[in-house]
Length: 475
Ligand SMILES: *Cc1c(COP(=O)(O)O)cnc(C)c1O
Image 1 (cartoon, helix red, strand yellow):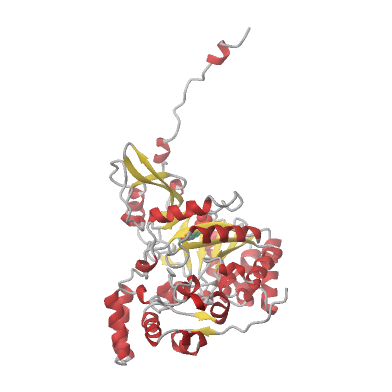
Image 2 (tube, protein in one colour):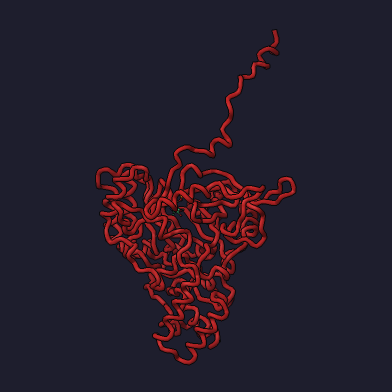
């Protein structure tokens, strides 16, 4: 395969007009984009613009919706405020407080990201880490806190608009190594961001090598990389010495006896169809990595079953493993992107029915919410009461995992906090445990219950063995 070299070029609000494709849009449309881009992050690159967006289909094109700001992403009064200020050339000093106000109205920190997920050691937060589920630690290297392009729906948007300082990111691998040594329950490290693949391999290596070489880390059996680079800049894996060096680094992880997993974010079939994206996946797998795929379900972008079924089939044929379908989180421009839970379940089911078991490794649709990852596993009617059948795929308390529970069916619900327990229950089964975790205060991340009270609900009482069949044995 002969893939021409491409030089990375980035476009933001400041140089948006330099994009030749902008001339296809009206003055009004460009102003609308700039208005929204004052509040929400915006960054694309030449590959996304030239290869992934179908400019004949703008503004409906899903890749355009995925990467370019749209008027509907802000409440109309907020949109008009900023637009009006731009039209009368308001100064930065005038704009800044309005922008901040709107940003803070968009629930910038959902699901206890800051207060509940950051572990503490000796009373101090551990920089650059989250530890929500017992087995897995998330690590945020300082230099990996941007991306090759931004998704308009990104739940980490506050850090890209300067709302979050970068204090939570870590400059050093030593904190990670120290923490892991003290936490033998952790078997998996997930390097995330932003996008860790924005880092040059030499820098990435500084974080990875200690995990392979330092003593006392034998319990860490997998290293994962959360990344959108295979979709937004696959040249990261195919072009130049740096890409080759990344393949060697993956080989070193494998040689150390650990799994190297690329958790690749693919939203739209188009992202998987270019030669360079396919080559990127092939190279990663040849180097010894597994590629697992995940994405949220987003209105205007990928809210149709065929796109998902086609993506999963394409992924399987390339050797990648479909992993998660997420529900859009309750932050940012959620009003523009959200899909009701019943519809998410319907889209997932219609897609799931179209593929073989090889692609049914995917789980979803699931919500990453404060107590854990909640799967919408069904819609059922029991004794005339319609309910969502939910299941905890991941839990802040390991005893919650694989528990089924029920919420009253609600056609408008788009997120967990809008759901009420079904069948006359006063609260969901994890409510008391969550109160304990909150009461334990900062730094108490995952928390195992002393006695698994829930097990009582399904543990079998001992029964006398049934000797009936023995008596009936023919003589
Ligand atoms: C999803 C997630 C993980 C990993 O969960 P897996 O089911 O093992 O992929 C870890 N930490 C957080 C905070 C997550 O949201």
